[in-house]
Length: 323
Image 1 (cartoon, helix red, strand yellow):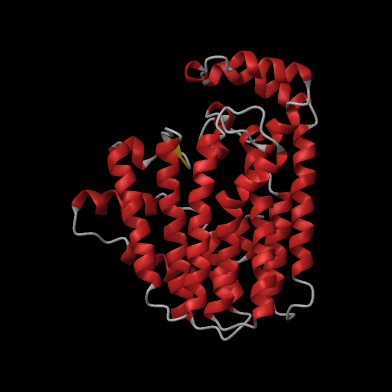
Image 2 (cartoon, helix red, strand yellow; image 1 turned 90 degrees about the vertical axis):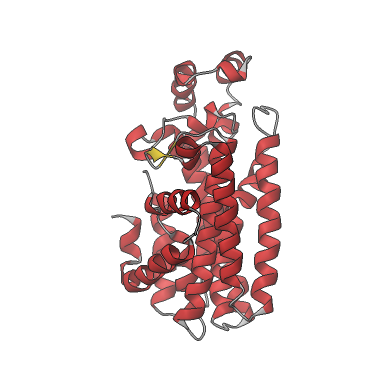
């Protein structure tokens, strides 16, 4: 089963959001319009809008307010991807050339800035101060997370705590914020919005850990980029942290990356083989499952309707995801 099937009943609402995203990135400048359109057409799971839509059903659902929040959060996510690809010097995303690859670093950075500005402009139509406060705090944390990721590249001495804090800021907070803002936009009770925020946080942590596992276990066709690409870029993910407890892997790692800028995909192939021979993948799945169970716990006591059931289904799907 695909993830999209768990929220198939949201098809009409997601189509409205897709049209709104297209409208939001319209630009008078030809290059900005072209680059932004290519990014949008590259697709994506639109998981953040899905969480906004679902959590909006725990209050007085208003599609216009919910759509505003969903579009803003997806635009912020899109902008962060463009900036990430510049920082990582990535040529492919989802199997397609990145904006950076097509237009160069400068255009890519300005495209990301433009999309981010559109996101903030979109949110101004929402007259709920609490929503703006939540979003502002999240964006500060996102920025800090990006700086941490740059700082921690090729740092083989970092701790599990460093990694968890980084993925919290990189991924989990924006998903948690999507859940909370969906609830706030629908005037849901405060205790609901807090529970949904925690649900989103735990789901986001699990989701990123699974992504980091798949970087080693999925095929290039499934990933849309070479396997082990995160390691090649010097990003220390959870499987690597666990694998480094293995003396052979650790020594291979240090030797391979003695000159980081000269390392190629072929150079890291033996590392990928050795990592899979350790129990790093299994340990990583256990950590992911720990967060998933905590996410499901947050839904206990919430209204027993379709939105809750879908949130539960999404959590269970993520736990079983292998591609």
